[in-house]
Image (tube, rainbow, N blue to C red):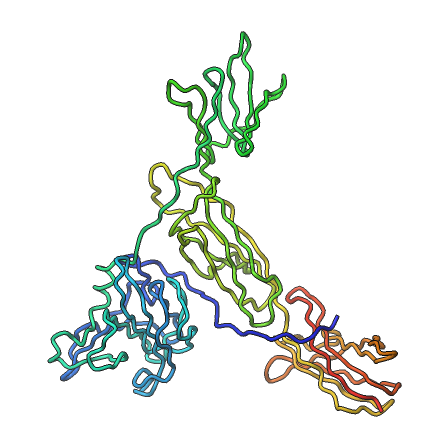
Length: 470
């Protein structure tokens, strides 16, 4: 079915980084601490000194945000940051330490800028690529006031004892931690009081089981941990195997009589704001990480991955927020299965030792971008007329990849007269579709293009093109 055209919102590239955190909890801007022996902070440059750390990476290597922050400046034409001293890319992001101290980090000699001014970034988010100078110029300026009013400075006069406010960026990150650490909730506890001392207890699939002697004969009981309902198992009915990895079950301390059941399994959710986004549009992937009682995990690592031919590939890694929530963004180019995993820390605090839940999954299927069919304002009756338009992404050259639906206005209502298969061919950018059609009745007509759903993309319709047949 052809629909009215909707506005298409294009998005910056989705985060694509998974660098390991460096000292102080920050992410190294080139992904690791191997800087390749390039110029460091304070290196003499004639009458000047270098006020940044150069980090060797080949052209095109990704550049990552060291932490949460807001992009202050993002320019592709900053003087001196291109090859041969020409203008080039420079990004300045305002970050904040765990103690609340603001600083500005300069990422210079970059290209393929993936962020814009005013945008929020997250730790490890890909923000650019190294340009043809084969290294990243990384500087830190803790103050918002620049001595020479130049936030782009790569070197300053030696006589400036304060280095113009610039500091050694590597030392700064190591001595100014990024923030608070992983904070899981305490394990949720369900207390079950029994009539007699319990024995043979355990839990599985949300139900606790135990045996107690009532009167002269022992009985086996089961209690739903969520609902609290209890029943006695029938004669010959046995409990299932206990899930000792998920549940920690202990007898209550005297003088109480009963069980304490602790659920170690975390609860991970994931949802996409739109399952069939427009071509090139951002999909927001949000969810939460809590325990079975709904208490949040704070600053837990969650990783977004996409399904690839050779397995799962990392897209980005984020921390959960104060309510256990997280949000990723992704721009799908084809039908993509995505999942989020909870990355358990190697060492977990006592009383909060959890097991990771199964990854949360979602599938997104983008639409194509299909142009409105081109047509003259007036079409001769019975004469062959070509109707053509654009198609993104590139599709295989063939017939039937696009359908053209023709409707004629009759008795003040639009009625479909014919549907025609168009031929798809390669173009300089993407593909084009074209169909040559004869229309035998005069009157008011309209046509739209329809891309049927396939294995890669969702059904997509263009807007209508009105014309007359005379």
